[in-house]
Length: 402
Image 1 (spheres, rainbow, N blue to C red):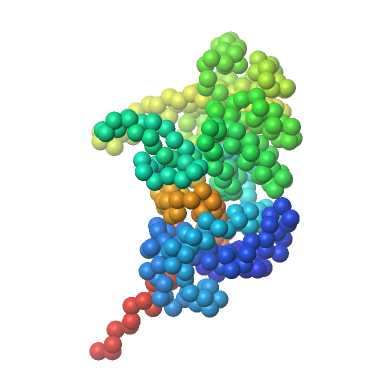
Image 2: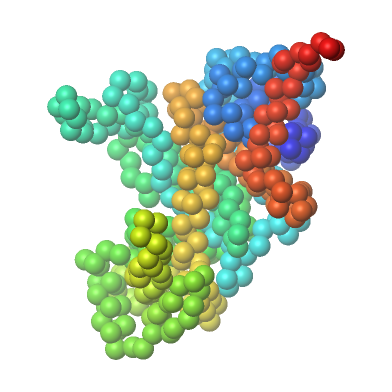
């Protein structure tokens, strides 16, 4: 695992294709950040935990004869490094996966670029110039709460999810405005890697849709605002139609699918609206009884029925949740990406990028480099523990012969 990560993060070999758009980082700085990548691969949880392995016998080999920097040093360097170099490594990594056909597509032969916002931390005392602020009611009365919020984007296909970039939301700025800025940076680098842009209900707005359309891509967003004419027009027409019925992943879907809507006047293109009513059963843990659940989804999209059929568009619409399930949930619960390793704006972006790269490296190594027999025997957590065990080796002397 460490050797595999070293190849992707190698210095200076992996910088050979860094273009003028992705400035070449300082090599000593990147060498100092490599332990952060290992911290996430081994799921140590904190720089202080990683620092306990400082006298391990393998660090000199991993760092080409260097020593593991202290936690304070790593945090200080993360605040100084240019994140563009890390983005360049991420681009190269994703390009290699595409060349090796390691990114299977969704239904309709699509790969989606998914945008979503995520709040990373809150505090009533510690803050920086780029902290967002809000007043909240507490037991001590109304207080100003400081927090950071970011927009993440990821490439999503069938059974794969790669977080590729992040952009902080600035004070006084909305999530979609930040997402448009992020799209401006991501599109030139990944334009051949994705086919459609996905977002939640916030992203169903004219400027965002039109910007994606102008770039030659399709877009899909959740439609749930009942005050929109598009919502009422679609519901009125669906009431006069019979749904398409099919089963998908244990759920019974009743789906209405219509194109040609022009009631979203701020988009210079007619839209297609898809509604899915899904019925499924869950087993209650306490009683052991099965209970029927019904959920309703609606999406608005620019992609035509001829390009992507009804069943496939439902799969594409639901794939937006992969950034929640495979992105944020896994990152927070298993990689501790929301831990504030250093409360400084640049450091937070750099550390997020390193965490994302580690998550992508880990899942690629696990799925593509390990044989099925090994995966059946060892979980991802087991492999992370092996990384930890490698670094702890040599810290405790072997017992004296008896």
